[in-house]
Length: 104
Ligand SMILES: C[S@@+](CC[C@H](N)C(=O)[O-])C[C@H]1O[C@@H](n2cnc3c(N)ncnc32)[C@H](O)[C@@H]1O
Image 1 (cartoon, rainbow, N blue to C red):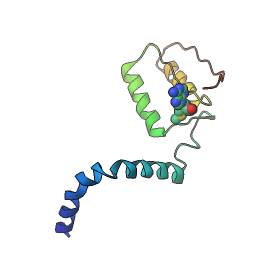
Image 2: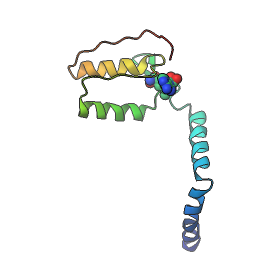
Image 3: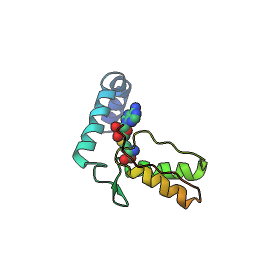
């Protein structure tokens, strides 16, 4: 068995050079489709089109960097904009949160 694994490992560079990227992309798309991934994510009732772990990581980055200004492009239905505005409130910042949808 160990021999087989070692032989397969030797093929990894070839796999990466040939079909690796396509397989990775298909896996990602299949995962999103099968799990619904972030389809039902909401922040205080407003839909957020984000992976929740990404939101958590973004929250950590914002609380570390403490930016004076955050501009979001691609607001969609406004959930993440509300999330960031609430985060800024919790950090004691001021905010000007425009949730009007003007298209993307
Ligand atoms: C993953 S969704 C996130 C939406 C929203 N920020 C949220 O968390 O609910 C990415 C959004 O960005 C938009 N988008 C993608 N490329 C864009 C671009 N070049 N300029 C503006 N919006 C873009 C998409 O239409 C989509 O609504």
